[in-house]
Image 1 (cartoon, one colour):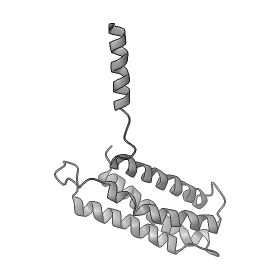
Image 2 (cartoon, one colour; image 1 turned 30 degrees about the horizontal axis):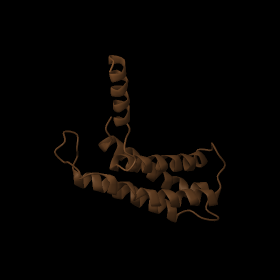
Image 3 (cartoon, helix red, strand yellow; image 1 turned 180 degrees about the vertical axis):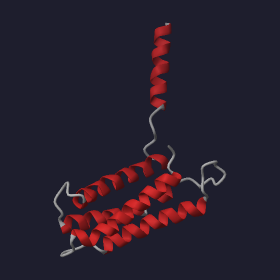
Length: 140
């Protein structure tokens, strides 16, 4: 074989190795977090006036966010508390619980006749729990 053919085969093999397995825990939790982000952005758009507030649409999004809030945690490997930037497994699980609780409260406050002013503080609590978790646990 020529050197060019060997280089081409090697490049093809390396390219095939670089793809993330969609069934891996990392890919699955990333997909869930992206879905959470899209859902949260749609709700935030209503809260911030980028789109018109519709109670039924907001409720559907809040219920979806509630379901998603409990989904990613099973896709995290055992938490390694020995890492230099880790705050410990208990803190991680507490942050996950805080998000789930905030999303549950948000979903409970939605429905027909509920105004944007009614849901705004509950949506802010969801955003705050996301931000706090990212600051503490998300790698830069």
